Amino acid sequence: MKKEQLEELRDKCNNCLKCELGKTRNNIVFSDGNPESAKAILIGEAPGENEDKTGTPFVGRAGKLLNEFLEKAGISRAEELYIINTVKCRPPQNRVPTDEEKALCSEFLLKQIEIVNPKLIIFCGATALKSFYPKKTPISKIRGEVLELEIGEKTRKCIPIFHPSYLLRYHSLEEGSPRYLMLKDLEKIKSML
Ligand code: URA
Image (cartoon, rainbow, N blue to C red; front, side):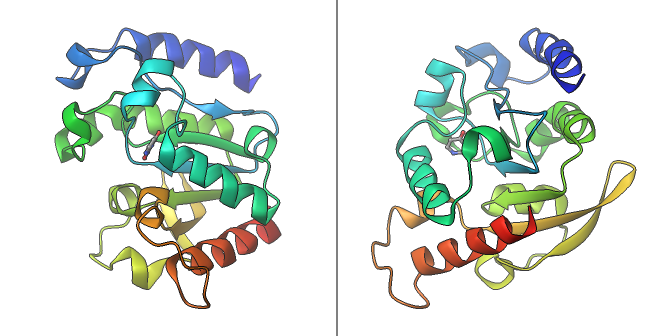
């Protein structure tokens, strides 16, 4: 069962102090969603204050906006997605995690991907994209494109989308606007699940 394997991994993560982030966390933020029914893994950047308090990813302002978009696209967060971050502990002042922190945490991320074995991986924002995609293509140029990437032992279908924190700055839903494009990308993802 995926749930049991993931629980074992969560316990290991709970004891992890491999990088500095472990010293200041209140909680690890391991995952959200149902790994048995999830068709896609959504990878964000890192936990923020609300996530560190609750132990659940995407529960703050950005998370609420993500929920609104998922609902509009008809994607069930609880059943169709398994949501994780590139690092499991909150970086101080919500700074971007360093390459070293991401590398030390990748053990957990890669194992989660292997266990859940999703049809699709969604890179939510530039930090997640850069962790797996070496070229410097900006997210605005590559979002919505299906990439085939070697992750672990497998070639996996991946799709980058905007991070909801970016969308908090733009309110228009006009054709071509960031929010419009986010909805189109999520509708495309829904059709692939
Ligand atoms: N932003 C992220 O990238 N992940 C979270 O869990 C919350 C906000």
